[in-house]
Length: 390
Image (cartoon, rainbow, N blue to C red):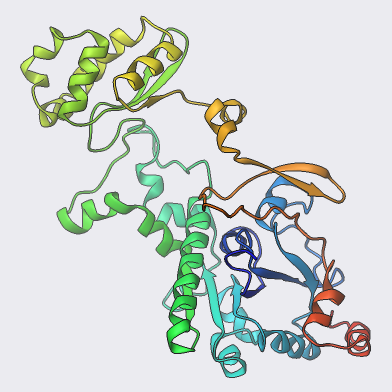
């Protein structure tokens, strides 16, 4: 028994934000049933990437797969029958689509008042942009992330990962857990809805509140931290090193490691505020010393002095690092067709519990098995198949 094994989740999600949400539940043992359209209905086959590719395998692991054609009346009735015994439904359709498919909250709650519906949209369930198609990069731009990413004067830059998709998924999963906890006392489910735009703005965190509280419009700062110094990349004898050393005490340690006590007596460097105002001068003094030793030497020296410091890795170097190996972030999964593959495990560690490591199902792989568990007879399943409802 895993922590979430008592919950049954019906997963209608596609692409990334929704599957990211559901994966948080599946990784810790929820009985997740991935509901897809049958092959003859889903002709696009492009959403979420190739089924046996890294992307699809990563976001849809630890689930069982069934097919239901929600465009047929029989398929919708079947799905509602599953809702009767389920705890959670998650979808990331455009807001109007859920009503056409009869998977909106009012419909589901009338069938099962304890149901929790998790919905992810591009811009919200209502408002002037509600019907617009949502996409991660659009949310990055409208949420402000692209305006602060990149080098000063470079112009807007997209982050290297789908930040809006991922955070919307995480926030939705958190909201679902809150709703499930509340249900324990009320007996009633909730509709939890998150949008890419809301998630992106929330993830802007202190950059957003610099505007809401002080009227400051954050600018691109490149590898420098927007408010503390010294923080950023410095060239070494054989590469680059990342230093994060804001604050007076940390500055003293940096000065000692670099052996630049005399230079640090400059009045322009006397306080955090002055060092920030004279950022170019401060960084230039540090850079001059950094070029005298290798990245590995500086990483050891700074960390020994208690200054946060590290190399900048490419992805192959990430997984070659001894600490990453020790943490076991590359999780082996046995796939029936691909053999042993490595996926990235959930980042949190819960004492005494391991993240589940089951492969992504094939389309409809568990249809008969799951429907039998929900009480359907062999004859009913055969009839649904004849009606092209599954």
